[in-house]
Length: 264
Image 1 (spheres, rainbow, N blue to C red):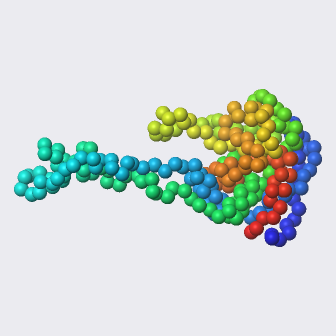
Image 2 (image 1 turned 135 degrees about the vertical axis):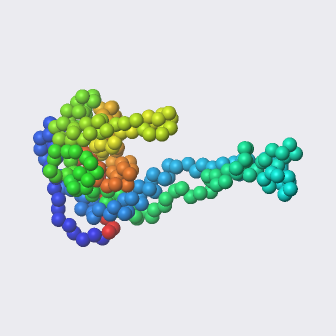
Image 3 (image 1 turned 120 degrees about the vertical axis):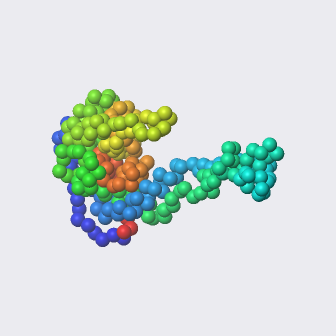
């Protein structure tokens, strides 16, 4: 059990940016930020989606050759009867010297308690303005986290969503993500991922509000995620905590029920 911490309160604002209430922040927002655990949990979640890849074990080895030995003025590599070299890594059609193997361990593992503590720590980092600014986010507010009334999710058009973000003082971060969108370096640009867009605002909602998804999905860098699906991948992209996050009031209450007890 953690020691008792001082009660923190945060204002609740509406779509116009006006304060309409106040909410007591759950103890999860007072958990110490553990960057090492957040990094481990991010790598575990990120690598869990990777698929092992490797070569056919017999690739380049399906030709029967025999070395001629010395005295023939040719390299002592396996050869066919027509003098063509086979099997060796440096010859045409030969095997690879060190091919990728499916046996390689590409997944990071993390303990369950460490993962939960990392998630709680990443949530707490969203309430630290200094960490949020270190990630490069731009906003006009002095206190975090940003908590909005549930009625904000009733917006159904992207123009309305843009006006909401402007009233909250975070639209500048969306502009930053739009201006820094660039073409990917490498061959990925030919494989359906041509553009790279920086991460911007994370909006945590209390349920699967379809209107909010449709309203915010066209704005660059914004992610909308229900609180039940919240993970370190959303809160700390790249393993770096402190993403600019907007919570709904019901989402904060759900976090309080989910993280009643947090182990240090």
